[in-house]
Image 1: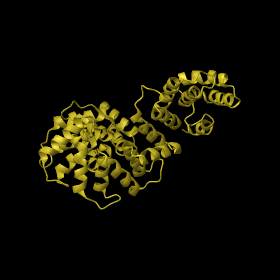
Image 2: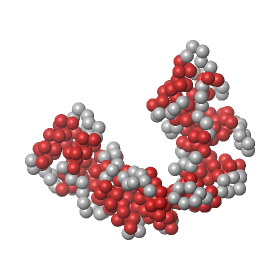
Image 3: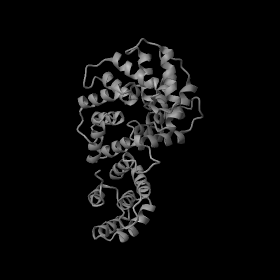
Amino acid sequence: MKRSFLRSIIFAALFWPLENNAADFMAGVAAYKRGDFPGALEIFRPLAGDGDARAQFALGLLHDNGEGVVRSDEQAAHWYALSAAQGYPKAQYNYGLLIENERVAALVKASASQWYFKAASGGNSDAVGRLFRLAENGDRSSQSLLGTLFMNGRGVVKDAGKALGWFVKAAKQGDVDAHFALGVLYETGQAQRQSFTKAAEHYQISAAAGHLEAIYNLGRFYRVGRGTARDFERARAHYTTAAEGGLPIAQFALGMLFEAGQQGWPQDPEQALHWYQKAVENGSGDAMVNLAFFYMRGEHVAQDLDRAASLLREAQRLGHPLAGENLEVINSAAATPAAMNVASYDAVENASK
């Protein structure tokens, strides 16, 4: 199997965030190129211990090849895993190879395709090729992940038609993620004629298996009668299940619905506040903006402009378009809740993907 070798990270290092240890790292690369493996090891080891992903990958490779150290699949896997967890594509690819080839007994073989997917998403072409081979040999997880690459244009040219083809193959084998993706494709009309009925069918299959995004999307369908009969009780049950499972968009949606009290949905500010807070804990910028409004107007919570501003600063850090102007409102002498903008339900009405 083809592995990513150390010489390849010389080029990759130019595009990886560099710390103050960049010079030391390149000295380690130079030692490796001279064939001074013990010298390279001496340089890479402390850098890897300090969390440098490139150095961790380099240590993994030295152990993988037995260069300057006794060859050890376990040590290679250890260092690859640390680097891969930081998003280093070459480590993700090599870690996938170790798993697929069952070189470390404790690692689950089924997860190899997941690491290839991560590496491919980061631009590693070898990982794309590996996913193709596994998918063509009938591995349903690889088929589904390859479909996701084509759907999002990560590591490959975006192509909804190819995405559809791979999702169909995986879904025929019972892949839950593939059924969910097909639901999104049918709902949005990508690569085939839009069909809410077919979208609902695929969401139902995934939802029955506990897929949170599918449960949420099916809840949306029940709420508005899209592809299914309108059913507010089922809608609320699906939203709640997804929200209790920790899905931020479902938590935010419940906050919006309970705050507004739309047709078929009771107005309950306490529930709205509860779900906004849950969504904030899970990183929802929309929920941060709307919860800031609660603190700004001081209804159902004690008025707290500092808390409102803190929420808006975090939402601004996440890139929310309303956060900056709302901060200006809070900081103005004539601050009033009426001057603030809140995130609308439009933010959650489209398919969760």
